[in-house]
Image (cartoon, rainbow over all chains, first blue to last red; front, top):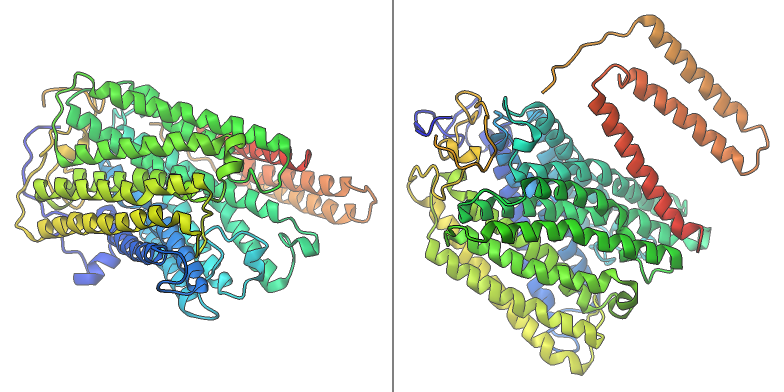
Length: 537
Length: 94
């Protein structure tokens, strides 16, 4: 690759294919345009989920009824969970940044199956529409929680079948994206790019893609079984008919625990890229980080039972799952220690993506350490189904994957759009988000230990003060999010600056023009060194 | 990266595999009339697994393709087996 980037090709944003305007986007098979379709859809769902969350917190500002009745609250926390989990964070970084950067980072012109890639987005939007239809038709949105636990999901009169079918369709989108990425990584790497010359984001995507491919069908079948139980009265999960409701929990979590790694692995991959770039160092422990991605993907399959310690499953299964759960801490810790070692004696460049990455590590560590409380049977039984779990979950999923999503957005934004946002405003936005996030979720740890159950519309008076702090935190967090997103939207309206490599990145995406041309590379690059090696172009 | 090696199976081998699958289907039906107790399910599962293996090996070309694909399929089956074993830590001891 040469160091001189010549802007003589129209970017993927300017390129005019057979179709123009909106059709030029929704019929494009270019991985970058599809990535942006995902990005905009996901952000729209994120804000919808966030508004639902704010209303939930408003209801919980004081004991008793405030702004809604209990049934509405049940529907709201279900839809908040469904929207955030299935429509924002499971597609997460993989669908948006994975689609955009995976081919570029391995020196390819596109993914292996571009049409299948576009079809995956259609399935994603189709599944989302079905979920929305489920909200506004029949007897209203489901009130089961996003987990659709049987036997309640078999008995409630709300619109479970349509919503579950929507989630089933969303699963297909995930499977096809995973399949596409695995084939792309195996078949389309640039000449000279062996597996151990791939950027670590690609390793993370590789582990993620395998989980998407292997775990998602399990939940798909489970959802079909729920539909069959409801429509045909088969009774797979209905104890009244000899079925086993704990089987539902097994099947659900066999997917849904690995799904946490679908969310967090690409996040960890993006954080690795950011820390390496802004430390101006070769990443510490490349192979260890690469292997830890695969180890997390593998061990992640074996720990689902820690969601079920109080379900009534056997004593033996409980200690086996507890033991296996602690094993996940090893590859996760490998990543965090290697990030720290990469920072050590680095020439650290304090730019917004770096601050986002640091915020990620801080809250992710709190989420991880509180996970130990939940991974151990003895302590889990005390806090199971309390607000402690809600706090832990949000520290991992929002504080981990969510903050990493915005870290990646700030890191790759100049590459994706060829424009730079206001860094000062971005830093202020992050600070407000960080304060809001901790004000919102940290009191929930204490509430949980005090004994406040999750998913309850009402609570005892002694929980009022911490709930009020938490609700105020939600207002701060929303303010921060508005600052962050407005800043990015404002930047998008500005004239292009042609900033090809504003951060001094060394991976392939920083060696092409910003925004990238339609097929990324004029000539497929030949790779003769590691992804983070400090070499002169 | 390895190049794809095309392989064209003969009609004879396709027909032989088809005959095996039809025969095994016949055995699946026939075995339901034999009283094996709990082993009826085991027998049905074993026949189904054999059929799936034949499809994977011949129709899906595992036998003729790169070793990496055999490795991938083996790994997937191993994960599946581990998941089943762990699930039975609940069912056997409940």
